[in-house]
Length: 88
Image (tube, rainbow, N blue to C red):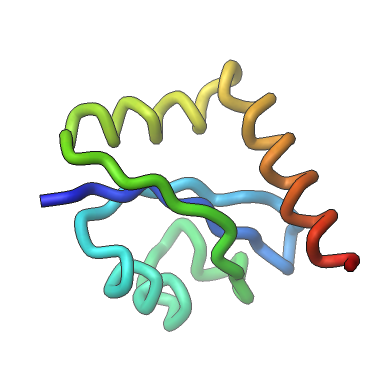
C-alpha cells in the first residue's frame, strides 16, 4: 500500500495545507466537499503537489517535516513555484 503526502493551496487565505493519506482521491473529495474540519473554512482549495511513499512511517515523518519550522522553507519554495506557474 502506498501513502501520499499532499499539499493543497487555499484560495481564501493564500496558505498551504499539508496532509497524508492512503487514498488521495477520496481524501481530496472530502476536502472539497467540506468534510475535513481543518480545511472546511479555507475553501476553495487547489491541488498543488503529492509525493508517494511505500512506508507509512516515512510518509508521516515527511508530513511532520513539512508542517515543522524547518519545513517552512520548502513550503515557501513550493508556494512560490506554484503561484509562479499560475501567472503564466
